[in-house]
Amino acid sequence: MAKSNKRLIAVVDSHTSYRKDIVDSLCSFYDVNDYGDGRIATFKALQEDVPVIIIVGEDVSPSNAINFIGELRNTPELSLIPILHIINKRNLDLIDDSKKTGVSTIITKPFKRSALIRKISVLLNANVEKEWDKLPDLQRDALKSSIGVFNEIEDVLLSEDTVSFDKVKGNCQSLVSAIAANDFKSILDGVRDHDDYTYAHSMRVATMLTLLGNAAGFKNEDQLILSSGGLLHDVGKMYIPHHILNKPGRLTEEEFTIMKGHVNSTVDYLKKVEDIPSAVFIIAEQHHEKIDGTGYPHGLKGKELNELARMAAVVDVFSALTDRRVYKEPMKVSKAMGIMTDEMIGHLDQGYVKMFRTILIDAKLLV
Ligand SMILES: [Fe+2]
Ligand SMILES: [Fe+2]
Image (tube, rainbow, N blue to C red; front, top):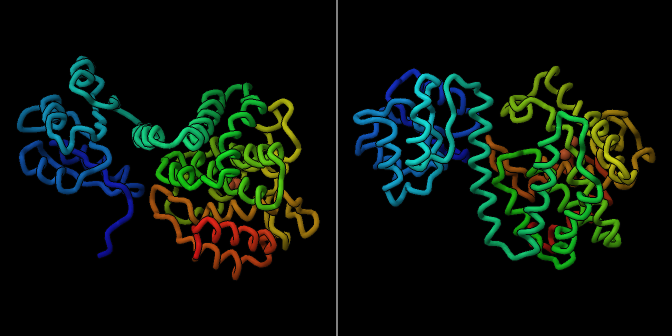
């Protein structure tokens, strides 16, 4: 059987049924290896098949969970692997010991499946973001500034507050400069493994939309607006429940209706942002419209589609096809471009598809 491309998580807990609950909760997004005790064989297996996160349950025989965590921390090959420790509400006095032993995060039982998945995401992202520190200033700043925008939006999502557009635009300058310097691949690589799908997708769209604007001769100021539009084009997805947004299989009709609602949610959000340029609105509102009129939400056709929206649609589709999702590896660039050229003639502006193809070839992302 072909090896799965999902990331590997390990669960260690002496209770078979607790372990099974965790495996069932995570298995559509991750590969999960589970272990029933903390004996030598488990350490051996963990070292052979090193997971990205180790989840330690309430009880780990032959000793206990805290001692097991201590042993993990003292095992060189495993000492840096993030640990998520599950503690029962009845045993909150364990929290201090757990923290002292070096766990990365704790979740108290009972918890919702979504809370567990969120904790895992945060841990994975902390690792990805730590890698950004190794990049040169411009690329590191482009990534940190963009995640800064996203965190700020998320922090006040359910209030009436919004980000300031000037700030978003300012935060996009490093990205635009990196593209002007033709040194942007590490930015695309830097978001590839990020577990916040809406962020990773939006940053890729922002990067590729700016590339398209750069190739089309847009000035710096206009490229900043394109980048901001890319970064903000799907903010409405932050309102969509995780299980729909990250569903591995096909969406039901009802789920798809909810998913399509992200366009209106984005527009509603952007309406609250002061001094937002109309270009940003257009990108958000029209990026799912198709030239033959079969897109949404308005079913615009032909000339009704703004140029910026045509550009956004091309990079949005490319990004969606080639994004890494928690449950799948990215599609190959050549395959995605083949689909966009051969099967989406009626949907996408083929002039921009061609321009985009040239960009990918120049960047050696397509041969
Ligand atoms: Fe979208
Ligand atoms: Fe999108």
